[in-house]
Amino acid sequence: MNGRPDAPPLAATAKVKNAMRLVAVDGHGYRAGLRVGQTLSDARALFPDLDVFDDDPDADAALLEAIAAWCDRYTPLVAVETLAATVSGSAPGLFLDISGCAHLFGGEEAMRGDLVARLRAAGIRAHAAIADTPGAAWAFARYSDRAAVAPGRHSKELLDLPLAGLRLETEMLDMLRKLGLRTVGCIAALPRAPLAARFGNSLLLRLDQALGREEEAISPRLPVPELSAERIFAEPIALVEDIERTALQLAGNLKSRLDARQLGARTLELKLFRVDGHVTPIAVRAASPVYQPERIMMLFRERIAGFHEDMDAGFGFDLIRLNVTESEERPVAQADLGGGQSRGEAFIGLVDKLGARLGTDRVQRFVAADTHIPERSFGLVAQAAGSAGTYSWNADGPVAGGQGGAAVLTRPVLLFDRPEPVEAVAEVPDGPPIRFRWRRTLYSVVRSEGPERIACEWWRDGRGGQSRDYFRVEDDAGLRFWIFRQGLFERETREPAWFMHGLFA
Image (cartoon, rainbow, N blue to C red; front, side):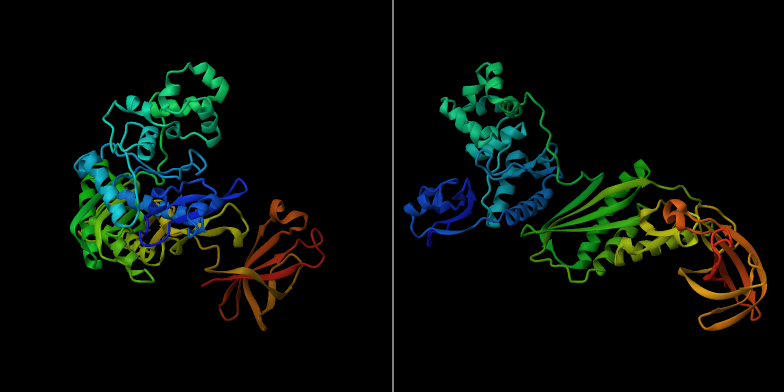
C-alpha cells in the first residue's frame, strides 16, 4: 500500500493466534516502525491515531487475479502463488516465466522496468526480480534490492539472504533463528542428513529449489494457447471498427501457420489490454474449424454486437492479442464447381453467426440417445460442440451422421414431450382403435398400421413398467396420428390405457 504523507499511517488487521495483528502496512507506517505481524495494541502504542481497517482476503485475491490477467501482456505463463501469508510472513505474489519473451521488450531489465513502472503508475507498489529459478526470484524480490541476477550467479548471491527467502513456515524460521541460523549460507554449508532429521525434508526441498538443484515447475493460471498473434499500438485505440480491423489483421497473421499445420481454429480468444490495466477477454467458438480471416473477424463482430452493454474502452487499448486455444484438423471437402459457397458452408456460417451473437450453448441440435423409449430417444447439445463431419448434404438439406438419401418416415414429425391420454375403443383387446376421443374431439379411424411393440426399460421404470403397442392411424378426414396402448391385456394389466404421442404431417 502506498502511504499518505498528510494522514496517519494506514494498516490492515486480522485475528491471528487469538490476537488482532497487522497483516499489511502502508509505506508511511513501515518507515515509522510498524511491521506486519505486530499486535494492534503495540501499534496503537506507537501511533494512537493509527487508521486501521479489516483485512479482506477475497478482495486481495481478486486484485491479484486481475494483476495476473494484466501480466499476460508479457508472457502466457503467469502463475498465482498459493502460499498463505503465514509462510515467511509474506503475502502471495506472481510468478512469470519469461523464457523466450524478454527480447520482445528490449531485454530482461527493460521488461522488468516496464512492468514495475506500469504497476506503480496504477497505484500498485510492486517489487520484481529476475533469476534462474522461481525460488531465487521470490527471495530476491522480497529480501534484496537486486532487480536481476546474472545467469548462473543466483547460487552465490542467495547465501547472504535471510532464511525467510526460502519460503519456510514461520514456526520453522523461529526454530532456526533460536539455533543462530539466520541466512541461507548458514544452512547451505551444514550436513544435510542432520538437517533433514531435525527439520524434515521441506527445508532441504526449499533450499534445493532456490539453488536450482531441484526442478520447480510453475502452474500457469491459464492453458498456453496453441497459436497467438498480437499487435502493440503506439496510440491506444477505442473504436469497435478499429478492434474488428485489428482482429482481421491478426487472423491473417495466423492463417499461414494454420495452413502449414492443416489446422482450423475451433475456439479463439481476443484479449484487449486497456492502458489502465484492465483486460477484456472475448471468446468465440466455431461450429467447424475456421482459418479464413474474414470468417474469424465475423465471429468476433457478432460476439461484440451481442454484448448487452457497450464495451468500456476507457482511455483505449494499447495491446490486442488473438489466441487460438483449441484447434482441429480441417476436413477435406470437394469445392463447389461453380465457385460459389456450398450449402454446407452456408449452414455452418449461419451456426457460427448465431452462436457468436446469442452464445454457442443456445444454438443446439438433436442427438440420438441410447434408449428405445421415444420421448427419451433424443437430446439437445450445442451445435458447436459437434465435429465438422456431423452433417452431410443431399438435395433436401443436412443429413445427420453423414448418411445420404432419404429415410423412411416411421416416426411422427411432431412428437409430444409427454403422451396425452385419450379415450379409445377397439374391436378386440389387442387390436387397433376404431375410434377415439382426444382433446374433446371424436375421431373415427379408417386405416391403421401396427402394432409396433416397445418394451419398458425395467432398469429405469422398475417392476411397475409396462409395454406399449404403437399404431399409426388415419381418420376419415385424412389426419394421421401416432397412438399407443400401454399395458399388455391380462399380462400386465386388466385395463390398458391409451395415449396420443405424436402427429404425422
